[in-house]
Length: 236
Image (cartoon, rainbow, N blue to C red):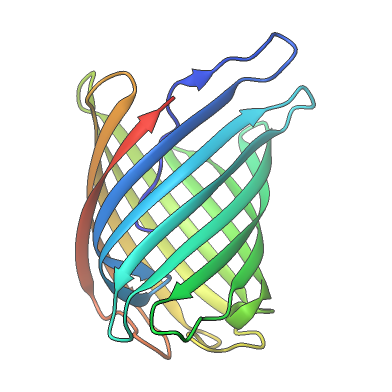
């Protein structure tokens, strides 16, 4: 997606329970581009996220994320649900999870809902956060699709209240699966994003960003597009 969320302050339960951190955000994107496919303009988004850990040494996260872009086929609303668990082994973190994508088209032609599972590996290399994630489609137009996504990120604190981040992402379709709707074998996309995090208070963060994306797909492929947006995050 076009944004990376920063977990804020936590809500502490009893000593027998793990710390739970939660946040809500709202945002605006001049374009909604997902994995090299242009899905519309003037996209308003929102999300609710939770994260925590357990005594077994696992970290977990779960949440919902929604967006409403305008496109040539009419408006549509997307609502996604996700859950993941992760464990750190020395300098390496391994995460597995599941995402369900649901759609509600306003032109009375509902899209097929999609779903996927993923396994990802990440760690710090010379001050950069590097990651590799495999996505396996389990339903909808991405059923049996296999996608490899590589990422590299760097963040820097400019002051006590302002930080900057740079993110690079490269995705490659290893197998288009049964759907083959948007991307075929060998399709790829690349994105570069520059963002700021401005702490307005202990609980509220303002995050503008600018992104460049280039990708290949069968429909609405992105050819060197630049777009931007911003969001407000409320930690509680």
